[in-house]
Image (cartoon, rainbow, N blue to C red; front, side, top):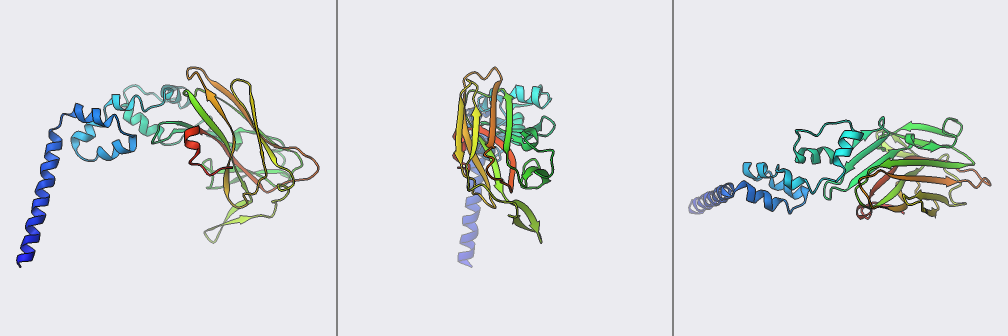
Length: 287
C-alpha cells in the first residue's frame, strides 16, 4: 500500500511540474517565441507549434516564413498555378508549396523541399519530344502508380532512341542538378504484388546512352553510361547548371539518346526529368 501511495504521489508531482512548465511557457511573450522560432528549420517549428496555443500563434508570424520561402514563390502561385496569394499567411503558402503542385496541363509539378525551401521540378515524359512515340510498334504510354504522373513512356524496340525536352522557369539563384528517371523492364502487378516483365529488355549492354544538358550560358554538359538498372527505378544524373539571376526565366534543354543504328534496344521506361538544388541531389539514388 505504501509503495502504491508513493507512486501516486510521485506521479502527481510530475503532473504538477509539467503544468507549471507549460504555464511558464504560456507566460513568455509571443514575439519572443516567434524570434526564437525564426532560427529553426520548418519541421522543428511545426513540432514546437504543438506545444501550446501561444507557440502555435507565434509560429504563424510572417517574418519567420519570409526568408524560408523561395524568392520566386509569387511567380509560382500567380503565373504557374493561377492562384492568389493576397490575404494568405506565409506559413500557409509554405505548407501549400511543400506538396507537389501540378501545372502545364498536368505534365509538370513544382514543390519546395520541406527542410530547406529549395525549389524542385518534375517534368513528365508526356511533355518531352520522343522519336517514334506515335508508332505503337515502338512506344506506348502505360499507366502505373510508380510514377508521380501516373503514366510512363515504354519502349518496346527501336533502332534510334532520342528523347528531348526543354524548360523555361524562374529559378531562384543557386546551383541545380538535372536527372532522368528511368527503369529497365515493365513493372506490373501480379496477385497484388509487384512484378517486372523483362521480355523486351535488350541492347543496353552494347553501347552507352548519352545524356546532354544545355545550360543557360550556352554550354553543353554531356555524360554517358550503360543502363543496367533492371527492375529498379534509377535517377540518372545528366548535369548541373547555375542560376545567377532569379528575376528572369532560365532556359535549359536536355536529352537522352542512343542513336547507334547497328543494333536495336528495348524494354525501357522513361518516367520523368527531375530538377532540384544540387545540395539535395546527394539524397537521391543515382548514377
